[in-house]
Amino acid sequence: MSRFIQLHILTSYPPSNLNRDDTGRPKTAVIGDCTRLRISSQSLKRAWRTSDIFESALKGHIGIRTKEMGINIYQSLTKQGVNEKNAREWAKAIASQFGKLKSDKKAENNEDLHVEQLVHFSPEEEKAIADLVTQLVASAAAPTEDNLKLLRKQHTAVDIAMFGRMLASSPSFNTEAAIQVAHAITVHKAAIEDDYFIAVDDLNTGEEDKGAAHIGELGFGAGVFYLYICIDRELLQANLGGDAELTQKTLTAFVQAVTKVSPTGKQNSFASRAYAGFVLAEKGDQQPRSLAQAFLKPIKPNPEKGEDTMTRAIKELTKRRDNFNTVYGDCADISTQFNIETGEGSLSAIAAFIAE
Image 1 (cartoon, rainbow, N blue to C red):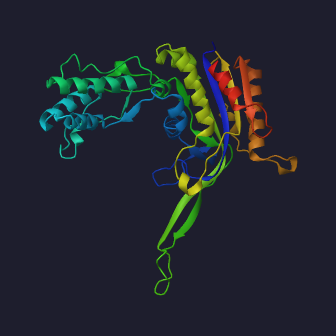
Image 2: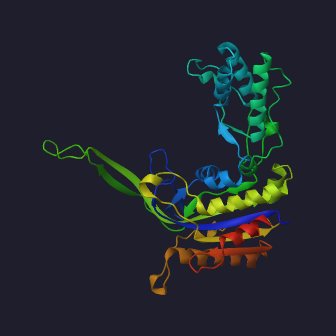
Image 3: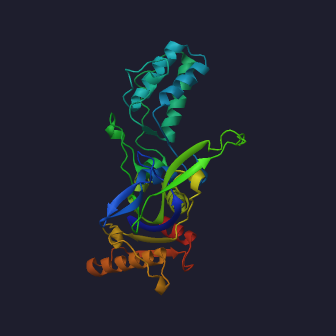
């Protein structure tokens, strides 16, 4: 099988604020000496792994990422009749297997049960924790060194297999990410605009005060985004314990999610849900390469030629792919694509191409 799968995706988003910076405005990046809108890879990956598509297609194979597992363990123990002192000590012993606890925090708010690092737990580890809690309740005895060995090197958590896991205190249980996701950027120069809005008080008759009940501003932007994804299929299958069937299911669900699921930022305000307009998928053992260079010079469509931004972006993307192949030789063994502008190809064909 081909080791690498590369996806080049163009998606047109209407006015939106999908991924905010620390001031609440859309994230940006300066590329080609001009400002572009940006959607971080972290935002995209979270949207995909928590999507309904993943939940329905990969149920039972999705992990949970949290600092609060110790609190869940403590609450489970107390609900089953374990006294508060033992429940807290046992919960600490279990949670500390996954990372250093916030030992300087107060117990009143259960902050002492928090793991300092955000930990991604696999379903197998969640089950091992649940089984140990049941055992402790039945035996009324503290956990031992042997039954506290809860970390699992092999697991079926597809989100960990795809995007990796880093445990600072237990590096031998780290997982190298099999899927690399670039930050999505607009293919053209972009500006952040401000939406000035007011809210009216429905019970205000206006007899005394005709002003608005609330005034606010919200940044937004719109554009065509290029997203690059590189999948190491061999590593993904190895991360999933060699399970070829689960690997295929994961890849099928993944391509469905990346083409259909948008980050959730300010969706209620903008309803900026969008499907991908163009996808180029490549497979081969060659060293992967992004096609972001196609947009180093911001795109300016020519309306006189019937071009819009998406059409021009597709033209520049495929031209850059062809130029790479001319200079370096074929950068992939085989490729396929779909194009919403021309009605060419299909998502099901792309999914089959990737998963087979």
